[in-house]
Every structure is written in C-alpha cells, then in structure tokens.
Image (cartoon, rainbow, N blue to C red; front, side, top):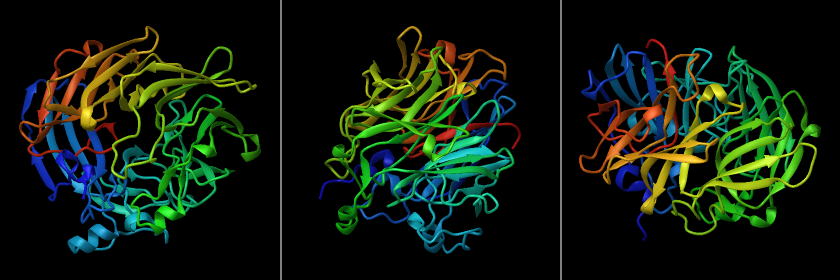
Amino acid sequence: MTENLYLSGNFAPVSDELTASDLPVTGRIPEELEGRLLRIGPNPIAADPASYHWFLGNGMAHGVALRGGRAAWYRNRFVRDDEVVAAKGWPPVAGPRRENALGGGLANTNVIAHAGKTLAIVEGGNLPVELDARLETVRRTDFGGTLPKGFSAHPKRDPDTGELHAAVYEIAQNEIQYVVLGVDGRVRKTVDVPVAGSPMVHDCAITARYIVLLDLPVLFDVEAVEGGAGLPYRWRPEYGARVGLLPREGGAADVAWHEVEPSYVFHPMNAYEDGDGRVVLDVVRYPQMFADARFAASEGPPSLDRWVIDPRGGPVKQERLDDVPQEFPRHDERRVGKPYRYGYSVQIGAGFAFEALLKHDLHQGRTEVHREGPNRLFMEPVFVPRAPDADEDDGWVLAYTYDRSTDKSDVVILNARDFSAGPVGTVHLPVRVPFGFHGNWVAGSF
C-alpha cells in the first residue's frame, strides 16, 4: 500500500500532552508582544492508514505564551471529542451534541478568540469547542442555543463591529448558511442560501457590503461514502464554479452569482470593494481538487489569483498575481474587508514541503521571501501589529516552524518590514508541532 502522506514525517501525530515553562530564546522577544500564539491541527488518536485523510484527524491545540520579553510557556492539548475521551478514558465532553457530528465532535481546523472565549472550530456541521486560556477543553457550544447547525473554520471578523461572519455547510445538504455571530457570543442572523449540489465550503470573505460565498465543484459523493473513502468529496467540474455576493443585511433571494473558471479555493487572502464598487477577491486557487489520488497533497499548483467581480454584471476578471505554489494566505486583520496592500503565505515546494514564507506587496507586484535553510519548514504566518494604530506592515510576522535536523519546532518572530532577514527572535520548543492548519495571535494577559 502507498504510504499515507498525512501519517508520515511531521504530518504524523504526537502522542503526549506537554507543558513546558520559561522556554529558551535566541535573539529577543519584543516587549510589545504579550499574548498567546495559538495553533491547531489534526492529531489522530487511532488512524487507519488505508482511509485516513488529513482533514479528519482529532484536534490538538498548541500555544506559546509571550509576556515581558519572555516565552512563559508552551502547551499542547487534545481538543476532546468522543473518540479522544474513549481512547484516553477521560470524562465525556460537556455541552450540546449533534447527532451527525464528524468523528464524535472533532474540532481541528482553527482556534480563535471571541466574546471572551477561546474556540476550537471546524466545518462540516460540527460544533465549536470552548477551551480555557491554557487550552484545556471546557465544553462544546452552540452559542447559547442560537447556532442552528454547525459553524465554520473560517469566520471573518469585521474590524469595525467585531462581529464574526461565516459561511456554513453540512455534509449532504444543498445549501450554504450565512451566519453572523455578535460580539456577545450569540448568533444574530442566519440566511439559508440554496445551491444545486452539496459543495465543500471551506472559507468565505467579506467586504463592506457583502459576504462572498464560494460554490465550487468539490461535491459530496455518495459513491465515495459507499467505497469507504475517508473524505467523501470529489472533483466534479461539470458542476461549474461561481462566486455569490450576498448583501450582509439581505436574504437568500438577494444573492447575485457570478461564474468563474472551474477551480477550487480553500482560502481567500482578503476581499474589498474598489472605487468603482467592484468586489476584488484575492484567492489561493487550485485548478482542481480531489480528482485523483486519495492521498495527494494537492492536484495542480496553487497560485495566488485575483478575481474582480462587478455586482452590476459582466464576466469576472481573473488574473494571476503570483504563480509560485503557496497556501495559508493571511494579512493584517485590521484590513479584513477593506483595501489592503500586504499579504503573507507559505511557499510550497517539492514533496509538499512548506519551505519558505512569502510577503506580497500587492501595490508594487513584488514578493519577498523568508528562508532559513533546507531543514527549516514553516507553518501559517500570523501578522501582529506593533500597536493598534500602527501602519499596515508595522509589526511582526509570527510562525511555528519545524526543523528536520532536530525533529523539533520553534516559533519565529520576524520584523514585517525586514521580512527576508533573520528572525528578531526564535522561541525554541522542546518537541515538534505537527503540520496542521490554522491559528491566531490572542493579545492580552493569560
């Protein structure tokens, strides 16, 4: 049998939870950085190599806490679901349950802070899982009974209101649900948008007036389920591909759909409206996804593309911003839904190696590269501004890394304005952090 990529090397799970204090640092940690750099990914408790897919592993959260120029601690904790607690002999997870929950309620894709809580989140119909400040599982949550279905791994926080906007899907359901989560941690609005198939909707975007919905040709496949596929989604280009503009205070009948070339997008970088009222949507675009090999890292190189959509009609303008293979796009989140200049991502090399970090100057059409040698691999970058009112690139880029020569991980702190230079500081962790998905900086005391 072909080796399962997602169970080998630094994709492989770690078995133990760990707490380490007063971590060693090379260089310095800027005094302004006070908070937690959180990260999450799949860490399967008992995977079958014949069917396991990276997206379906039990969640594990990782955190590094910075304070007063010190790295106070590193922690990793399982995000407890039914499978984890059964395997470990731990008490059941408190909170509401969904009968159709994947993996016994797993949450493995993103970890955010909202309404004073830390939340591990995932897509596909599962509920968020509340964690405490030290990453211990507290409970599943449906936001006080206000969340009608599951949630999303990629809600977008409006920097002006603090609300979260999300596109939610459930397996085998022919709709995308728009959910608005208020600053009080309760859902204030939902809109059920019907679609022709049952697409995988990993992410979305917002602008000042719209939530941007992605109805793309990766669809739930009954035959894949019957054949025992771990991830029951397949590439169906005949379905077509389209982008929907739903007014943020509108209803399902107000969505305007715009066709694009068949492709798949896990992650937009950002979206905004230009001076002519057009929606500018920057995405990491794959020419296809889940078409062939079960364990393929990707199917065609993912490029950074721009789609310009005129709400008044006409074809979508599609252009290539950068053809270097890349993923995990981020930007200064004070600019969510607004015009922006800088974006960050991970360059993907041969063998699905996350070999460098990229900084895109979208005004100048220029890209800077940060490398640290062939053994140093990078996870998703997170931008942290120097101060709340600092300029867009005045701050730091933080990322977890993996060093193949030591089989351990670090957190690197880069000066965003001297991006290709060596790190300002490197926090050395006593263990490796497996390649996972997403994370965020949570400022403040802990």
